[in-house]
Image 1 (tube, helix red, strand yellow):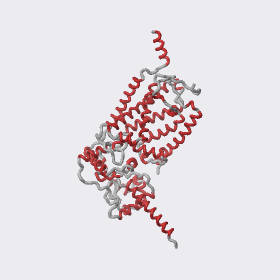
Image 2 (image 1 turned 45 degrees about the vertical axis):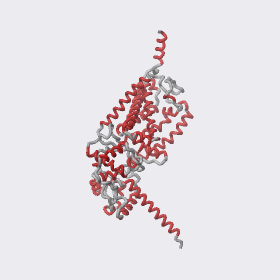
Image 3 (image 1 turned 30 degrees about the vertical axis):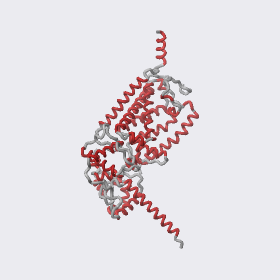
Image 4 (image 1 turned 60 degrees about the vertical axis):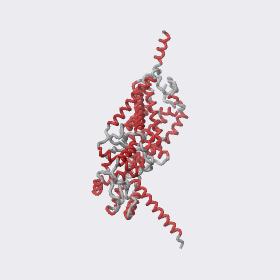
Length: 229
Length: 278
């Protein structure tokens, strides 16, 4: 047994449980103790020109890509059945890549806006910057995986899904994951970190349902609370 | 003297030893038959009949548990095995322990005594491959013909030169020349019975390939190797460019869909005032 073995055990069999165990109490505590911080604290009122190019492409991109991952997790056989024709596989993979690139472009635009606009820069917190860095790494590594190790929609369903379900069943099977390329491992570990930081960052806004951001009319919002006033 | 407890103890010992034997046989079937036979001749790895007479048990256990380490330290017998396998290193076997290695050696001793071991290997037909075999193999590779036991199509992780417009997967190796690498139909066929690499083993343990699927696949790989070459990276570049182009179009579409978006408070006030002034 060597260092790589123990590192894999830690990253793929321990870290996900640490993240899952921390996630629930931390999100509940934050909701109960500091309910008004359950928001992404819109900065639209401070700057509304570049805001669109961060907000819209990023959110539509990341939502579709995340949905794809969920489909592979919950319906692997149906996904493999869809992919059983190369043309259908290509349509799915190209669509996934398009939305992945959209989310990267959107996030890059959002980060640039926060760096270059004084007012928005001043209301960007430390956890925000950490989150942006992790998300940039997550999306860039995801695009890297899509391009350098295709076809993820099929092999996710046949290798990553069984690994994730083995975690759910409390009987981790790391055989396939341990042998995966470094980029794939990076994408998975970074996903755990993003989920781990979820309760401590603006990501909590995902949990606030009903969540009609996708179809409601555009509206300018102002902040509620004193800390960033 | 009451013999009952002794009898029960003997039964338990026998049952435990039979279970261990079965466990070793199952383990061998899942992890070893892709490269080894017992009395069926050499595949990628050597025929393991009477292996314990060729090397000491201690050496064999050490090698089974970590082949790469024994090769790395320059052991001459390991170097010879490596040369005979044309440089293919035995992969580390997931779940291998000293006890399991000992059980496997006991199994190999027992199987070597039999006139015909259960691990003599896949008896694949020697008939020449037909164009139909190649076409069927190609359909299986692409996924157009689903695998009987529900395994994922080869295209998910592997590519073969010019197999499809955007190529195949790149999680596993390019299989254009796999027929040559594994030295022909017997080895490749045996490998496909129980693929031994960690990702393949995990994926196909529950979805083993059927003999009637293996033959056409081998035919397809033989055909691909005969045509030669390797898959080029243009397919990946095209895929990436399609993604970039699609994203650019999507950005244009978003700008168009939200063209009446609210851009700034002041601009709206100014426009409103101008409209009222007219």
